[in-house]
Structures are given as C-alpha cells and as structure tokens.
View (tube, rainbow, N blue to C red):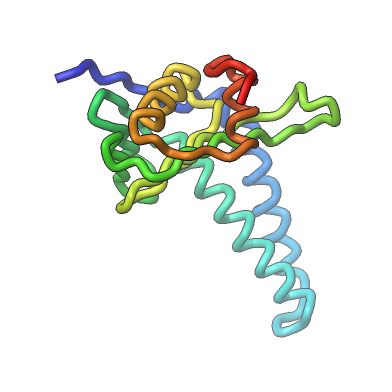
Length: 166
C-alpha cells in the first residue's frame, strides 16, 4: 500500500471567494425584498440570488473538502457534493485549464479536471501542494495513454511537467 497524501484548501485561499459570495448573495437578497413580486426585476434578482448562492455553496464545499491521493487514485470527501473517487486505472480524461486574469497570462489560476466512468473531479491550484497532485495525476494519465488537447499540453509545459516539443 502506498502512502496517502492529504490536501486541503486553506481558508486564506478561499476568503476572497467567501466574501464575494456573501456580499453578492446578501445584496441580491436585499434588493429582492425591495422589488414587487412577480415582476421581471424580481425574477432576474431571483435567478442571480440562486447563482450567487450556488457560488457560495461551492466555496464552502471546497473549504470543507479533503483531497487524498495515493497510487490507487484520488478521493474527495467532506464537501456538499458527496464522496467522489477517481481510480487511476480507470482514468478516461485529463484536462488542465488556465484561466488568465491578465492579457500577458502571467496572472490567473489553473484547474485540473479528472474523469473516470463513475466520477468527475475538478481541483484548482489553490489546493495546498497542487503541483504534487498534478504530477501524480499526469503520471496516471500517461500510464492510461490518455490523449490530451493542445491547451492541456501547453499548460503542462507551463507547469514544468513536460518538455515544450509536441
């Protein structure tokens, strides 16, 4: 049996998302109380309140989640969305996306998306020791001979996991 690595999202990494979610949901609910019921504005604000509420729930779920990885696979537990397990032997999709916040692409975040027949897991780079988990998942994807997109290849190069040629 291999050693299990445990990863969590640190509260300091999620504080901004939590504050944004609380402020957006709170303001939307406040304005929802001020507009007449069954008007267009009411329904628009209702949809926004639901969206901001889901954003907030996702942030709280990450805060509570624990990600474990070993030679058998990856498990996510503790969030609102139930326990999810990705077995490396059953991995069918490996995708690494970069979401830039600046034109020169120096700022932003990365998100790793892993899929097997029974589960899909998305993990962003604010997870502690993300690069360690990314390397582990990339080795598993290579063993499973999963084809990757040009975008994923470029992001793996940027992460330092593969050489530039393709």
